[in-house]
Amino acid sequence: MGRAEEDLHDQLLQRIAHHYFVGGMLQSDIAAVEHLSRPSVSRLLTEARERGVVQFRIGPPVDRVPELETELQRRAPLHACIVSTGKPRALYANSSRLGYVAARYLESQLSHVRLLGVASSRSLSGVVESMVQAHRRDLTVIDLLGCLPGGRADRGRRTGSASVDGGGPNTARLIAAWLGASFRALPAPFVHKTASSLEAALSAAVVRETLELGPHSELALVGVGSMKRFDGTGAYSPIPVKELDELETRGAVGHLCGHFLREDGSVLEPSGGPFLLGIAADALRQIPQRLAVAAGWNKVRPIAAAIRGGLISELVTDQATAASLVRLLHP
Image (cartoon, rainbow, N blue to C red; front, side, top):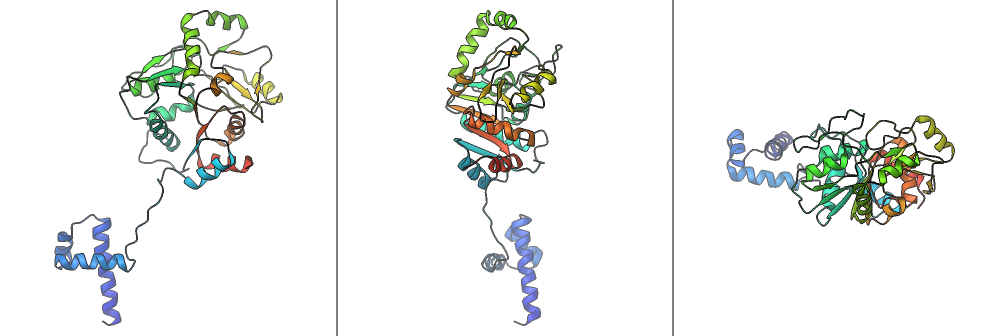
């Protein structure tokens, strides 16, 4: 076979391989298009594989970065590290890639869970938007933080409308509705300006009962916040920026479930308020799985503090945040 014939043969191999592996054509259809017999097409496809014209690559799920997950888990005392890629998830326009990856991981952990605690926050909205509808009548979702009703949790929508008092949708209630689970509310404001206001909220039996049930959760889903803002459970900045600045001056680097954290993970108690209604830090640590979903340059130090303080045992974050955490945390 001369050089010209070899070139034509190689071009034929490439065309047939493209028809079959990219175009999805049947071998019989390829034979008709290229004026060949079907056995000839089969033989040429085998040659294309043997000569490297066709190369198969088996890799990790495109949504995750396993090497970074391994490195982060090596440096951090976490049971699981899930790292999403930084690229947008174009095929799922209604959800972020982080939210999609977090939702898939959460769903994979729920098969044996009967009590799911959720610390409602805007940062978990991407998880809700990416969840697959289910019918978990054996599951109870528990509010871990005080959250007044605000937003509809019907099964046809994944986001709630804002309430008249400025509160956003209750993430825990939305998750319960989407999973077809029962829901235990903590129907009281999360942030109280005075101790007497907090005591009044605690006088309600339903509030006390839900607070007592929260630590019995088998899995807790939480967000992590920076000191730039404090959304609480929906209302924007229920704690004024001035007070946040004061807490930051005293050493706070972030917050989780309303607990302000120092760099070493210890809890910084606000002096003279605000008074927060929700699960205590020690009670949160009693929950076997404490899954945080958080990402962003301003969340790196808060996440590291939450890890050091033992407040989270599992983390879902994105590629850039994970890389920064690897640099920040010592092995």
